[in-house]
Amino acid sequence: MDQLPLFQSSQAPFTVSEVNAHIRDLMEADEVLQDLWVHGEISNLSRPKSGHLYFSIKDGNATLRVVMWRNSTARLIYQPQDGDQIEAHGNISVYEVGGQYQLYADQIRPAGLGSLFLEFQKLKEKLEKEGLFDQERKRAIPSLPKVIGVVTSPSGAALRDILNTIRRRYPLVEVIVSPATVQGESAPKEIISAINQLNQYTKPDLIILARGGGSIEDLWAFNDEAVAHAIADSDAPLISGVGHETDFTIADFVSDLRAPTPTAAAELATPNRGDILANLGELQEILYRTVSDFIQEARWGWKEIANRLLRQSPENRLLSDRQRLDELLSRGALVLGHNINLQKTKLAGIQQQLIALSPQNVLTRGFAMVTDQDGGIIKSKTQVKKGEEIDIRLSDGNLNAEVK
Image (tube, rainbow, N blue to C red; front, side, top):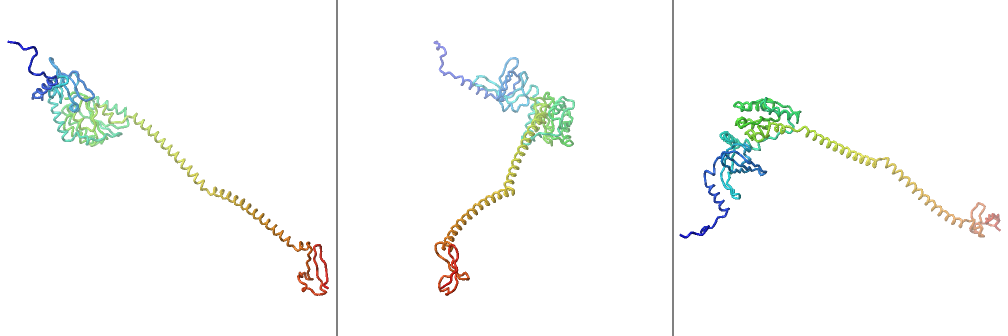
């Protein structure tokens, strides 16, 4: 029998992409691989800025790559770390670009605590549907509280951290501690009672609910449904500072503000004394500039008013009128002098005319003026009689005559 040449086949070869896509389809068609929990130890954990999680889970013989997208990591209560034994839920598929199958996880929980996490998730979903986590119902934290209530264990380190932080940042505030057990079976009732007593008797501006870190069992009192309702019903806004930064409880979701630690809760509850002093300094400078500007503007305004009054002053008007009077008097004197000179000229002309017409001047030209004894001028011979005496006035004297 003749052998076929090496590699000879009637079927066209697959591309790598086609092979990977085919394997992906096979895996996604497997019901077991699409809904499973996998137990193992975390290694090579990566938290990029995108918010996704990339890591591997391994046992003594094998390793499985795991991807958790940001929308799932945002709901995480437990924050995984390298070396943690966990249980991860999700589905198996293929990352075609790298030719690698991996678990796409939507839940992660510490190994051995599955029942607690299921209970936690169940309560969280219930309260979320009731609206206890809604941002609309959360109240603003007062910026300058006068009284702060603290619900925590009186012997725990959390209380010392809170008091030290408040004393350092804002020593003016009054702190009222309402003690409560924060761990164990009696803790939920004591926490509820402590919150209610503060609201009923002290009426603080805000309340800090706090305890230090611990395991999920240690923090379980803060996952109690009744505690959640007590937080939601609190008259004063409430800041939760339970556990460490990676710990989340139901109390964190219900509270008006979540702090990663008790110390951070005290920092969020109080203003910084240094910031207040700096703000006061800035306000003082602004006030100084404002007052200075106001005074300067007032001075300019007063000066303008003074100038206007000075311009409207009767004294100025009197001085102006006096000057005007002087000008009028000077002008009147000039006009009067001019008129006088004009009249003098006219009079001189008239005088010359009179002089020209004066009888004396006529007499000098050889004429004589004849008058009777009474001084009447004789203009006609009919005015005299024979033998009547008459006077004849010549230019150089008078003659007495008798009419013949």
